[in-house]
Image (cartoon, rainbow, N blue to C red; front, side, top):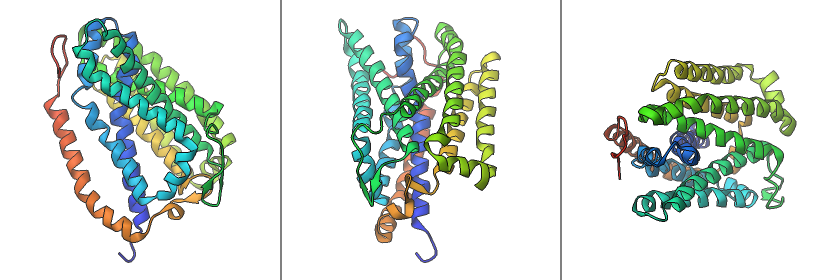
Length: 333
């Protein structure tokens, strides 16, 4: 396909898939993070029922992004997997534990508390691991040529631990605003009380990470202050969304806090992409360095043109079918 840069197209597809995963699986991970702090066992039933019909479909986007990354940019896997093996293992283990808990908790009687902790613990571990991996990505990887030469624990730094905590709080905020949207009565009141505190934590961590990033990635300072000044609109829009979250909470709106929180995530994510562009394996390798052969990219792109509309269609249908409030004694299970 003369004149068409398939690497750019694939970068867009993978970025879209990862963003969809963060937005859609983020709130059900957030529900799990809040699980131990729920007012009572009825509230936990409602919380789990609010995400039970959609959680596994949400994780389709993780598979799409991961498979696309392997096919289109194999160098990313050859560097990032040795560098982040433990973090990725923790992420997948957390997702497995919470996935099993969905099916076993409603069948258990005396052991239900174990599945409660499995659901909560798996959600917390998965969310924290994702945030820590993002922090390690911002810091970059120690490579010689196309080979990772660092150690298996190099990704564990104070900066990556902070980003792990930040994403943990961010997903919890998404989960609380989702519960405001999907529940009523004392559960919704509890979520309304919790959300402002979570928003405050997210904003504090966001501020610290923003100030700290130029110290761990000097190129970020140059990019933001001298190269592409227009990108300052992204953090401004993220802060505007945060204000809309707070405004929606104060007015006890049901949908606005959730939608605005998703906006916060989207603009922050776009800011990260712009900060790193075009490096897909920072600090040295661009997406063109990491790309597979054009023939391979084209062959797989044709399949993606069919797969993505199907995923979007069944995702939209699922959310439509299971729309509305979830009440005590009702739900997917």
